[in-house]
Length: 404
Image (cartoon, rainbow, N blue to C red; front, side, top):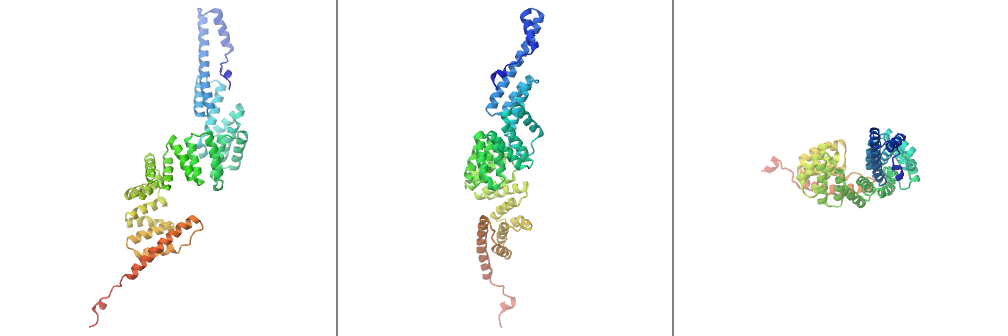
């Protein structure tokens, strides 16, 4: 859009009125009326040109939201302007193409109408309109069609950020394509390096791909720009893995203060508190998690918190209903410890034997966990059986009297 396009095309009536002003002079009443009309039109034209120029500057800088608002001011001054209406539509479409909430539901028909209008008025924007149509296809479950539209967009503009974003999220859904997802989201960040939401998305994709260090670095960048409770929770998770317990406690504590209804954050906070020896705090946090969402892993954390405080009876009450739903080896082991703590050795021995007899899973990491549990169960089984065998049998009354 050249500067010449921002000048105001005066109407034929205005030019005639301007001529009358010059002929009749400002002293005549008709001249005054004519001059007032022209003056208003000049003022309107100047305001429209000003806001349009500001909008153009924002649009070229990639700040499409601000561009739309600035064009909107121009349109408020001159609601009949077809040109400004088109610019408003264009800015709205480009702003929408970067909105992550488009991936949470269907793209509105109004937005697709915007794409048609932009295609007609701004042919150079076809890469972004193709990406937007790709969003519409993928959110409707037509993955192949959506992928082809993203590739069409990149054929028109290899640096098109919305198309790379669409591909990144598609690849993330497939574990085998996570390296491609990482590559795509890095290309997105080249276009928007200071977008906190995109940095957080990049962090999750890198975490899924196994790059925990890179994921933590991207999330740290996001948190320096904007703070969200779920991002604090994720950072707390990274810090727990790194054994930075103090940092984890700080991030998770801030997360639950911002969103007290986040069960996952309460559960992670309970884990951090138990690891630092704050047993009562761990129990309280675990209870909060269970009260929000009665999920098995949250209940398991509560049972752990209770066992560490030797509240074995309460732990049993938490663990027994869990075993009735699923015979998980971790729950069996925790319950065995609770029963042993209560002195119910026979029941504990039965559970330890069950653990020792479990067949290891095929997954290598799970098999390692099971192997460690079986080794521990074997030790406790040997110790308890030894204790029972060394306890002398009660002597009967007849035996105690002996022979006469």
